[in-house]
Structures are given as C-alpha cells and as structure tokens.
Amino acid sequence: MNYQITSLLILIAIACPIFALGWWRQRSTADAGIVDVLWTLFTGWGAVLILAFADGDLGMRLSVIIIHGLWCIRLSHHILRRMRDDAHEDSRYAILRERWGARAPGLFFGFFQLQVGFVVIFIIPFLFIAQAPANPLLLGMGLSLWILGCTGAVVADNQLAAWRRDPRNRGRTCRQGLWSWSRHPNYFFEWLLWCGYATIASAAPWGVVAWLTPAILLFLLLKVTGIPYAELAALRSRGEDYRRYQREVSPFIPLPPQRSTES
Image (cartoon, rainbow, N blue to C red):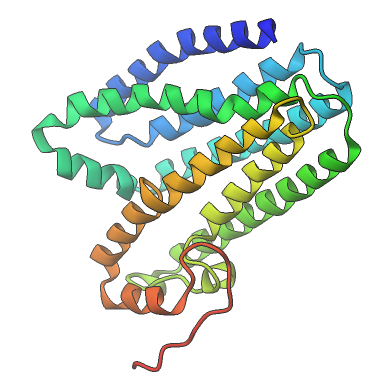
C-alpha cells in the first residue's frame, strides 16, 4: 500500500501545475473544456501506474489496466473531437462563465485545481484493486458492468453525434435510440462503468470503500454539474421542445418513454 500512496502523492504533485497550465490556456481560448481532457488523462494513466507495480492478483490488475486504459483513450479522444468540432464552449462551463462574470478567471483557477481532488476520488477503486486477491466472481461481474457501461456510452455518444450532423435536426431534441429512453444515457452508462470498477475493488479488504466513487459520481451527475447544467442549457436553446422531452423521457435510468397527450 505504501507504493500506491507514494504514487498518488507524486500524481498530485504533477497534476497541480499541469491543471494550472490548463487554466492558463483556457484564459486565451475562453474554453474550459481542456479540464475534462486533463481529468481523464490523470485519472486514467494515474490508475494504470498504481496498478502496474502493486502486490494484488496479477490477473485482476491486468484486466483492469486494459479496460481502464481503453476508457482513458476513448473518453479523451471523444472530448478532444467534440472540442474540435464544436465552435462553442461546453454549455456547463459557458453557464458558469456567465454566472461568475468578472470573477470567472479566479474562480476557474480554483475550479481547475478542484479537479485534482476529483482525480484522487476517482482513483480510490484502483487503490483497492491494486491489493485485491483473485476473485473470479467479482471480476466477472465487474467486467460485465464495465462492458455494458462502456458500450452504452459509446452508442449514446455516436447516436447524438449523428443526430447533430443532420442540419434538419437543428433546434430539435435528439430522440434516437437510447435518447428516447433516457435524457442522459451517456451519463447513466458512464456511471454504470464506474460501478464495474467498484465491484472488482470489493474483492480487497475494505474494498467496499470503493463504492464511494460511483456514489459521489451519481451525486455530481444528478445534483451538481451534470444533469442540472445540461438541462438548463437545453431549455435555453430548445425551449418547449425540450420541456416536452422532459415530460416524456426518464432523466437518467433508461425507461420506456411516456408519450405526452399534449400536442
């Protein structure tokens, strides 16, 4: 465990100045989306470093290194592509910039540094996986949740991207595929993926603590910077079309849609 704690401290020491450079970059670009890329990279490769030289079961560690490395590559590429293709800042950060006004530069610096703390929170499951003994049942359950979550997130992202590419859909809410069952299927399946990591971590002594990570993620998605800001931006841009969508479609967990009787 001493190795994992030392690695985590080194990761924090490196992350703080790198996130400060990210903050400096967003001052000139007026796009804070780079914080998501940095968070993904540090959460991804920091966890891989912690797992690589640990004492836990080799099969457990290698399995998680592979899937988490794939997660890191997939998500960072998705965010970078979205930043490249979208001329506007992510709605969550645009709303924060608007609300903070003249205080935005200083508050965004604190926001960027806060993400280092979230890197630590999201590395918690891997600290336990690094010590976990072999447990084929929990490994199989965790991998199944991860595969379902990752597949669902990729499908949801691709369905939304395809919808947005069609100019006929401008100003209209996506109701294709998973988006007809959940208003935020990408968030739901990302959360499910992290439940997979916590399941695997449960094989370690005190591994149940790893469930703090999906619990905190769920709170952030439902109450803080996930769904609330995304829905506020959607209501601003799509108005009544999105209000009807809210009445008919589950906010988070995919469920059969309820067709409104209103025209």
